[in-house]
Image (cartoon, rainbow, N blue to C red):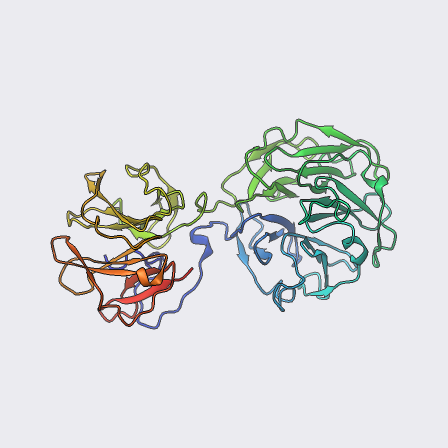
Length: 506
């Protein structure tokens, strides 16, 4: 029972100290793709193997790149930090992460990288090859454009006038200023015609390019794609808390006429914020599928189950499925709760609930699924940190949880029914943000309790007298300085038959 709280249980067998750790994203993200808040996906074949690779922008820190593993559906991806190492080699000063796109901006056949965001547009030329990219910063091409687009503009490149070079459309978002004399109005789209060449572009503001394109709302997320297979580019907008907006080009390749189509994307959900769309043939059937990011990072995939000229989009929720909690503040407790020989997962949330993930896989290849249980409706109001523990020694798992209040809550498992015991830990209060951890630290056959708190000095250790009467002990950890918002875990890390201490630190 000592190791109930350690993720190592599901990843490795017991090792002799020291241990080597390998981050395994596929445990909670089957595709291998991990996401951050406000995700912005883009696909491109960067190694010329016929498979679309993936870059994901975000509003947190750095964009992330993932190689596509195979020409199968559904495929898996692996994260490669080296691809963008030059972009962020000096930290994040004067870089962006929000809106990445791969396009051939210098006419040499390989893909270059442009990332939009707070610092305008940043251009990274690919000085590598079509199979082995290497990106270096070039800050001259968008110097003029950046003075006109604000701090939250998303780029979309397309040869809209069919003259052999790429033009630029900028969807305008909510810049960090409400002064529209300095920044353009959120929701509009600006057009910049390439007045240079395919290998030496020069982008000049040209409002005629956006004739017929309306203000889309607070944030404009444009992308161009030939959805009706008529050899010209159509226009799709993502929006906040609404479905996508689709304009067919009913004109020509040289002179587009934008005609609204309200049916093609009528089945797309309308509840998520920050719909940031892109298109790629993910299932290798010759037509475009829809992928978009959201404010909580989750990627939505809609497969085209229609045809190449008459698309029909159906949600495919398993492609980038991620084990993720609404609202965040996830915690981890692992135990074989259903007694089937593998470890299941219990997590807390900032809403105070207990979320149970049943392991439908095996002890070495877990497959976690959210499952309703008898304790699904229990709550400690805010910031729960539940752990599985057999506190009453009846061979089933009870739940002990910390909470924002600083108290410790106990729910006794009686043959699958959970009842709160309000007396056992009634005298425990660490102020705020309690985080419990159990271990038989004094080796007397019962479980003692260590509780982390918002303030490091409030972290407290309680010894168990054998009858679940807990008394504060001020000496056992007298040599430890606990951090604020500490998350202590007791476990035998070095496999020498005593408990070691690991502390998570906010």
